[in-house]
Length: 223
Image (cartoon, rainbow, N blue to C red):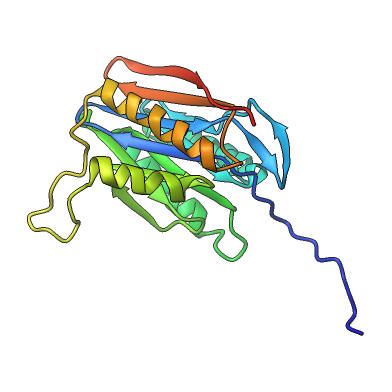
C-alpha cells in the first residue's frame, strides 16, 4: 500500500474576475467583490482594485494574501520614487515596475494575476496585462481571473483589437465612448456571473479620465 501524506501548499486561489478597457481619453477597470476558497465564500465585499497612483489602478485576482503583499511593496516603491523625483509615476513606468517586482520573485512567485489600467502622459487610456512572473503586454482591453476564459472571448468579439503584427503598428485603444465601455463591462460581468461560481455578489467599476477617478457599483447575483 502506498504511503498517503497530506500535501501543504503555500498558495490558494481566491477566485474573482478583473477587466480593464482603454479608450481614447479614459480607462475603465472593473472587478467583482467576491472572495472564495474552494466552495466557501469568505466575504462578499472585498475590493480587488488598488489605486497605485493618481492615474494608475491595478486589479488583481489569484491569492489575495500575495496580492496584499504585492500592493504594499508597490506602494513603498512608489513612495521612494516620489521622494527621489518629486512627482508621481506615470502608468507605463508603474507597469514596468510591476513587471520587475513580479519577475524578481519568479522562483517563488506572487500568485497574483494583474491588470493595470490608467492614463499615459498624453492622457490616453492604457491597459497592461500580466502573468504571475512578470511577463506583460500593452493591450486595448484585458481580463484576468477565474472568469477570464468566459469574458475574454466576449471582449474579443465586441472590441477585436488590431493584430500586433501589422505595420505600422495600430493603436490598441478601443473605439467605444466611456459610457459604452462601462455598459459593456457591466454586461460582461452579468454574463460571467451566470457561469462562474467564483464571480459574483457585486461589481466595482473604476473610471479614470481627465477629471480624475470615480467609482460605480452594480449588484451581481449572490448564489
